[in-house]
Length: 261
Ligand code: 5RP
Image (cartoon, rainbow, N blue to C red; front, top):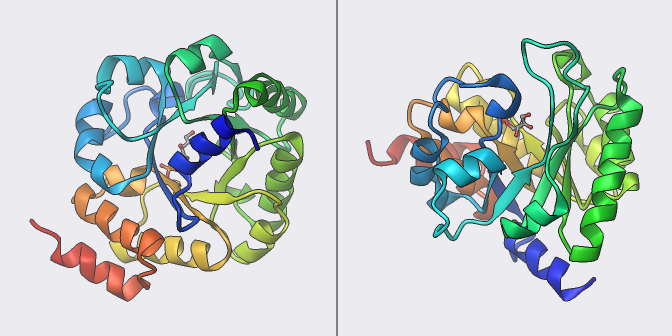
């Protein structure tokens, strides 16, 4: 691997082989999202716990100070909205010049396997890998399910992850599900898990992150279950202990409970 790509990867996958990404890209198709009305305000108190921040270029330029040390993973797909038609009808929104200008450590694109726009979506990923490889920028493919939450099961996710990896993604983001080890084992590149809508209780999120890592994920790209939590810093600190300190759910929940109020 070229030095540049290896250097970027070392920023987003830490020496222990694990990673903790804070996802705050939701506005790119949802608009203002509860607790994410101002991404900068929501992000800054959490950055000390995470390894990278996942945002779009508009938010990066307008709300994130360029002096932060946290690596950026840039969301570069879009073109749809919650009030429009098919969420899977995305394109690439950002040029390679812009990715380089923003000095990002990696980029992220959604891939909608099994959707009406599957073909375009997979070719968007291929195109992006073709643009990024010569410059050593790692691509994270996001296995998106749109509104079809029933797709969050091992058979579908294993297929989606494998296709993303075969198309050239350096990392694949997917969901935790039952039999998650089948998803991770079938994917030849590292897998990280997202959270989805906020869980009913705080222990649940700590537990699924733990189980995901036990099942073969190297970390998380998590959003709502952190910044929609009543105590986002406590949750970020607890999840960091699962990801980087090998805490079990009980130990991590103690971190959450005992975090400064
Ligand atoms: C939105 C995304 C998010 O980055 C991803 O789903 C993680 O966020 P959450 O944990 O809130 O699901 O790709 O399109």
